[in-house]
Length: 429
Image 1 (cartoon, helix red, strand yellow):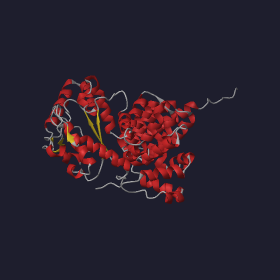
Image 2 (cartoon, rainbow, N blue to C red; image 1 turned 180 degrees about the vertical axis):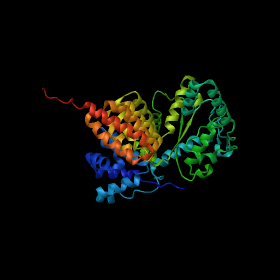
Image 3 (cartoon, rainbow, N blue to C red; image 1 turned 90 degrees about the horizontal axis):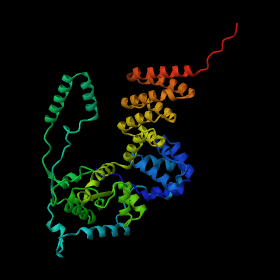
Image 4 (cartoon, one colour; image 1 turned 30 degrees about the horizontal axis):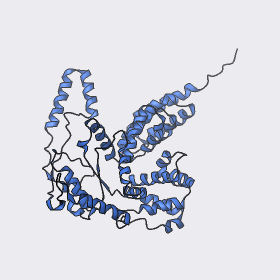
């Protein structure tokens, strides 16, 4: 199914010309619950362009572009009409994009032959490779849950541990075999992120060049793709993994495209990165580069999540705003991780958002919020204790299935509040 496409230049123009900074912060981000997480990411030093970037990024990541446009129309109908339309295909015929695609096509049109000046068209000799799925080895890396189980069983007794090991081995052996090999073009249309493994000289680089050439010359049908993408072919041999891969890619792209165009195509989800020559990087860098690739394979949102969680566990208050944003993520797994990290962070400003999370539809999120509040309870002020006690008691009524978790917490908070009351003064007799 073809995705809906938006004209981000028009959306950006509406936000830039239709709203002053304070309206973007307050009327668009703060007053609208759907965009409150964006407000939590903003600092007073942020300029208007960066606020707009954050807002558009968040709307794209959470499928809220229609909600954003509806809100902007209600707030400033005249400007909204002026900058229409807001939907439509990217401008493939712009001189900038046409020049870029022509350069990509020229760079990959011929098969490079070492020691020869002969120019052989790549499309004349290319044969699509076969790809076989490689599964992770479960016998090497157990899940975190299974490791905890094994540790517990080890403390309970050797016999139980051996039984668990036998169970794990049985599960591994009972897994079905991987599917048979298929053409890479078939895989491209099904997976957003691919790592192509193969022996030196097996055609990995030639495959990436062919993909770039097809996309640059309007032949995406040869790749079984129903949408057009802007190909970005880059070699990783010179990448310094101590830097951000995203900045490295943007720096390379900025030599050929303007920053506004890069953002436009990034928001559209139409940049297809073809990263080559990892095996030509210095051996001591390859492990770090693989880590950077794993980070980049996720959206910028997920990368911020990883950093924020790490800072939360370290007690670094810089993590507070990102973690509060993640607490309202649509992915319940990310919400649970954020709640847990907020508990370790120990910042009282997380109390109210965690109390609100007690009403989340996911039981796992509610339980993680309870655990975080238990950690924060001894550090709460009297006022916070009073509010938290009332709200946790109500939450125990809202969610019977976690009553046993919430009610003891509410009781503990009430006791903390009582303990902080001044001692009664007794009259002298």
